[in-house]
Image (cartoon, rainbow, N blue to C red; front, side):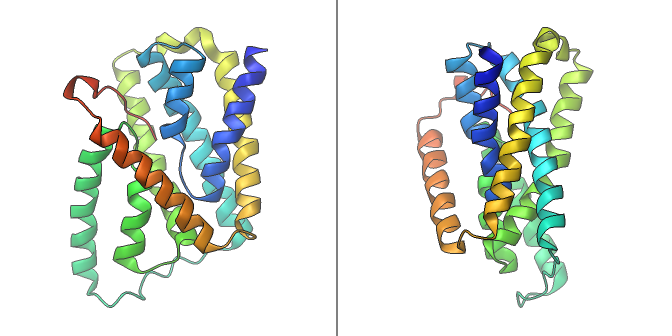
Length: 212
């Protein structure tokens, strides 16, 4: 029953990965801690592993299924200036992401939209591409600290949630062609509002999450 619940939650959160380009850590971490009663470190590691599956699969499916062409030259700024803005934005997002406890997809997407003047669907796909190395680095950090053994006994649970995430990502990416950009902007705005509320309630001692 626990693995079935894990699969269901993975699928639900995975839809975000395929639909809007988020790994879903904002929603998965509270589920792992509050519903499945994992300790913080266990929840973080499980979240990173499942996020990597979700983001990677979502990116591949969206890329193949929608034949995206990454044409970022529409915004009238010199290339060097855009790169500089992107670097600064990346640093700022990294700071806020560490405070929010996520990899920053909900901040990366609007930044890409504003900086490169692209549609939210393309911005979401680019966010997935950016999220993959970010998550890998997080897992590498915990591996170097020999912390992955914290979840060694949870392989069945992780497998179930990852499988659910793959299904959810497939559903989300399939729905992408039918969902208007306006609705995606509304969804992203809601997630940004929730993240802002989370940041407003943040206390230094609570800075303990590192997800996607």
